[in-house]
Image 1: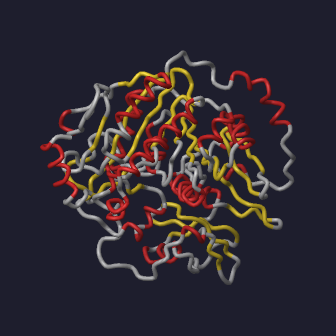
Image 2: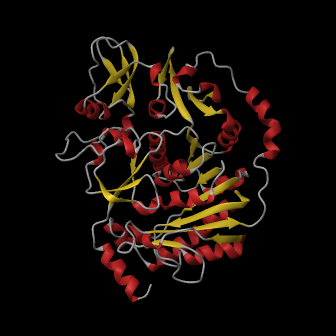
Image 3: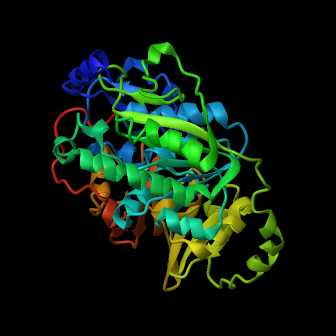
Amino acid sequence: MGEELFSRLTCGLATEPPVSIRLNPYKCSAAKADIPCEEESVPWCDTGLYLKERPNFTFDPLLHAGLYYVQEASSMFLHHVLKQFITEPVTMLDLCAAPGGKSTVARAALPEGSLLISNEPMRTRAQILSENIQKFGHPDVIVTNNFPADYKKTKLQFDIILTDVPCSGEGMFRKDEGAVAEWSTQNVDNCWRKQREIVSDIWECLKPGGLLIYSTCTFNAKEDEENVAWIASELGAEVLPVNISEEWNITGALIDGHPVYRFLPGKTKGEGLFMAVLRKHGEAPDLYAKDKGKKNKERNKQQKISIKPNPAWIRNHEQYEIKEQKDSSFIAISKEFSHTYDIISNSLKVIHAGIKLGELKGKDIIPDQSLALSIMLNPEAFPCAELTYLQAISYLRKEAVTLPQGTPTGFVLMTYKGIPLGFEKNIGNRANNLYPAEWKIKSTHIPDGKNEIIKI
């Protein structure tokens, strides 16, 4: 880095990191909300905001409703990259996606008509990814739990692949003392090899002419520039320049001359990040051309459903295909992506897809949390119960919440400030809280201070 740049980095690592959030454009507009943010917003993401202080995010019901995502600003650079290069609908894979920050950035930046597959190899992290994708609420996302080598076997092809690869974590030094303690040159070497293995495994799944976005949260050139150069020369790709402003204080290459983008605490207003964009050599073929003739046959093989969800639960339901799953649950997939979903579900482990409408129990279909948080939910399909702040926190703790007198029996949509939080089942003398147990707020104490970020 040289003395001057390294000195800025070490000084930056000793300071408090900035606090930032990214609004969900499908659920929240800054123009319609009062947010205690700084005058300066995140310059490379039009929905990113720096906050004046760090609030108690856990106790804001609108965070759980998916109106915004807590994310450090540097990672939002993906928004700027996708907006520059992608102007038509694409199929994108986020290969190492948990906890879901970059996946939700991508879904917001991609043109409508695009499909995002969000993958996480580790099972527990894949569940967290699924939760955050469902809270975001966009229907055209599939979440999988597979290793890159599993994707290689499928022969699937993608227009864009994001590889936010595991790394030595130097970009985490400011907020995680454990990352400092675990760092070693041996670990850098191990990560360097693993990163090349991951990219090699997934390379065949990137269409000729497609984009690979290579990303780490580390600073050293061995895991960053050296790997970008290796991908370009050994696998065959061109490293593409990204249009940036000098005012953003992004650092370029430390070695060689490839256009790469490094975010350094103390210089850039965010945490540590490295990113490069590469275009694979070759001309792009017609995606899934060889499978198109099988589409109708595969759809005709689906079993007949005797009890199924009411299509009117979602808006524009005629554009969706309802599919019954092996666990007696039902999902709604856009007809445009139904065939792609069939291919993926037959060869990979799908954790979540489209909109999970509900699950058959006895003679009832229990509406799912995914439906409540989907931007395609038809709120008129269910009676609603508006909650106070304290009631909303109780509901999110999965405690019993008393419904107003006169609330119809059956499934009731619970809302806060008119925003859906989830469902309860009103059985007359009491109501059963249907909020997912694994998502609940575990703390029984509400801290003093500013707990609500967005004032609608």
